[in-house]
Length: 263
Image (cartoon, rainbow, N blue to C red):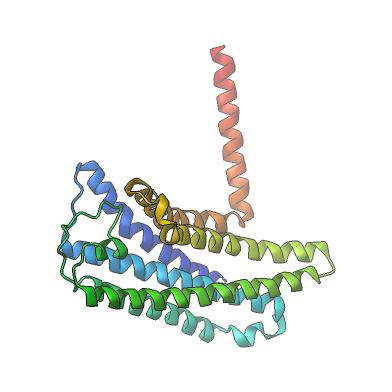
């Protein structure tokens, strides 16, 4: 799990570094422009890291399934070589998927202006500016294939967690159940945030669509999950929880002291 968390942290860092620095630059310099090649690079790296992250979350679910449901086979099924191969496969899959989408999208001619009106360069919004019907249909088919793969991963995650919870509920000791749940719930929380924000951003009803809502949803699903992931997993660390508790207690004490001294 530690090895996969390292890879997950790299994808989270990549997602943030792909979108936030350019948005901060535009905000500080009061501009809304990005070069065509910069837009293509931003779209490529964002979808590369996001698709890799979802693949990693699927593998991490399998890791939890083996650890809880087949603990005696854990060393055989998830040895260091197997973990390295699975991690390499996720990065390669993310790279190939992002390369296909980006190359197809940015090879299309644009005939409806060059204003996206979004937080970053999203492929669906770039497609709206295209006037190539065949290229548009080709990208739609790529998106359909990607959605099917994502749905397959989601079904696998749901099925795995059904088996995990059945196994956990059969653990006789309360301490054992608590330990098992503590290893699964952070991952489940990360998957839920990732899936819910992305699904609502892309599958929301057209009747409630608006430029401001689309912009807010872009920020929500591209920034919030990568930002919350490290926090969710870090809260399992007892030393970090003690440090946070101590810091909050100190802040509360100083605020209380200032309040009474001012009174």
